[in-house]
Length: 319
Image 1 (cartoon, rainbow, N blue to C red):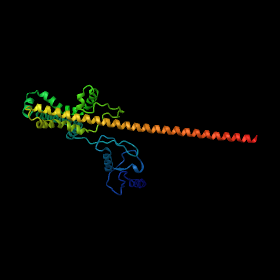
Image 2: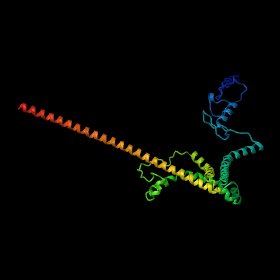
Image 3: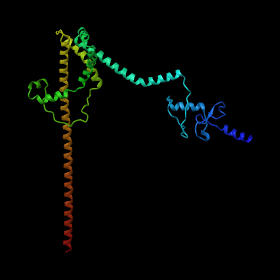
Image 4: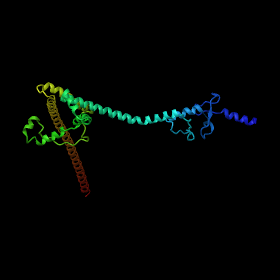
């Protein structure tokens, strides 16, 4: 009996935690467990160390599986039974966690929608007039307002994004020779532009998305201010705004179309200068290679001729 006790004591005293590497001598009150099939120095571990290690591996997810790093045995974690209050709170927490993404998306969409509705209402009051705009919206159907007002900023942004200047420029070049008055309005646009290779990205533009967004949303306000300054003699606020918007669109787009035409002419001339330089270099290299081959063949002919003369001279001397 004493021999068995003597053998068991050293085995017990040799225990070492594979998490904190502490032994029985370091902490005699710690609780030891053997959670897996490991043997030797890695089979013992402190209960508190193992719980802390499992918590670090799960990272807050209590359903995550954790295995021993040595023998890959999966730990079976048994939780204590929850009371009714804790169970209800845990169920509510899970439901809230699943519903939060949908709620956040709904709040975001609702915020954007009501912002668009507010912007549409303010735009109507700016363009038509404060009192007239309120009267129009009060007499209108609520469903029509809920659908029509948010479409105002959407249509402004889409109208700003559509690059209809390209189509206008093509039509102008096509029919400018028939209508000479257009050449006086848009000078130089009727001139033919040499064809250049198409770019890889036809939608590439230097105008940023933020500039398009801000320009589209600020356009009604600027048109209203310009209309009050330039067309103060017109009594109707709607007519002033329409006249101002028409003139602004005409002059701004006119300058942009002329600028686009000049850029195309510059790019085409630059492209053809590069092509001419490349053609000149290739022609020069070809001429050099042909001349070099001619000189080489002529040198070989001279060499063969000298050898033939020496050969016949030697034979004649022997004879």
